Length: 421
Image 1 (cartoon, rainbow, N blue to C red):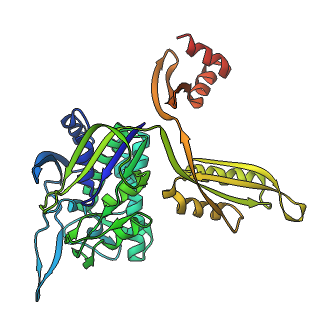
Image 2 (cartoon, rainbow, N blue to C red):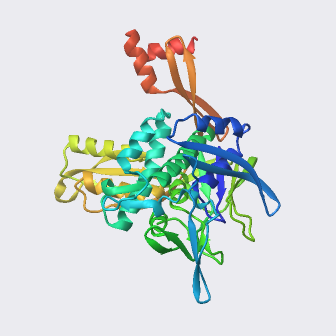
Image 3 (cartoon, one colour):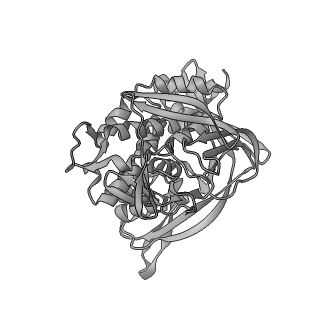
């Protein structure tokens, strides 16, 4: 089982997460070249080696039309405040401090909303899964800004440089995660820093309101380090990709990456990524159960589709007898802990239930990966599963069905053809 562990003892930002993952690749420069050919408008990625506290790592910079975004900490020293240039490029992608509603205008820069973000991402021609990941992560940021500023997501407008900077970081991390394809992502509790940060709207406490909103339900802590260690982009990426938070598990390490922030502290300012083979897979899932006796089969089917689209691991029904001798349906949704609130929203929106029961369970599953097989009938995806001393392979049904339809064959006949290749 491929396991990725992120040590965020000095927080996280998009550039630091990008750099930590780059160091896990055998040819990081080639991947940076790939990033620079994506065509993100006005964006150029730069990678450089950096040494902090005697440890060598990678620092990533994103330039938008030759400009690198700089943020400012706010520190109170005795009787007066000092504003200083913010070197800590944790924070070079501070989406939150360049966020404006439609009522604000900027004299020199264009502003983008979520519709513009979707248009930009669609133009990058990313793999379908990566495009979905990018928009989902950016959606977490937009949702946070919407909540903080009390306006609909459709009215949130982002400053041009901050927008492209965040799009660049999010796209880079999503592509790297797709490249590494970890089966499990574990993260330490996140150090968010302390003090205040200077934003376009004024002086805000650390963690900034958008970051605090995104990190709801995630273990975090502050400390003696003054400054913003975790940015909204870093928070959103971790919230989206991390399977669970906790101590480093047992891993047969294959690679270690250090993603450096620019600012210097007494503690090495980096995100550390550890990648390797974990033990046979066990994870924690939630079972959300609820009974209904007043929904049609079509309505239940529609609700199940919405739950799967929302990221449920599994949704299934069981016929039951209910009070007053009425037949009913028990619906059970299996999901990751991080998806609890989303699943509850979808359950209450699309079903008639007025209550949901939650059970925390452990499951043991085989290590799984998808490979693409070239055949005379086109590309076919095959799922390979292994662990606990067993291994098996299975062609994806959708690919088999397409071949069967084109060749006027049955599914079994297509399987036989593929086995004979």
